[in-house]
Image (tube, rainbow, N blue to C red):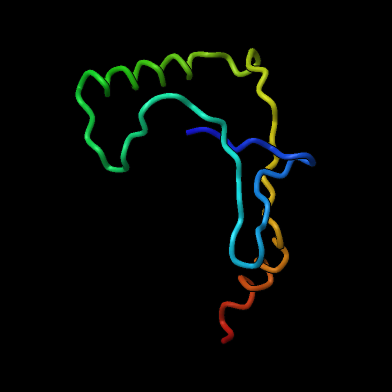
Length: 87
């Protein structure tokens, strides 16, 4: 998985009209897998090794850029969720 590229102002999603939105992701070379796809024991072992290596890195040594993911019109969503008992 890879995170979307933040736009100017740090937004990671932009609305396109009332029904659509767009995000931009960096290109990664390789072959995408499929959800629910079984992988070979060798591929599974390689993934486990990569995750184990990732989790052995001390957090203080990572210099990752923080990106806040916002939700446009969040106040409207919160209002709607607070009124679920009403039609």
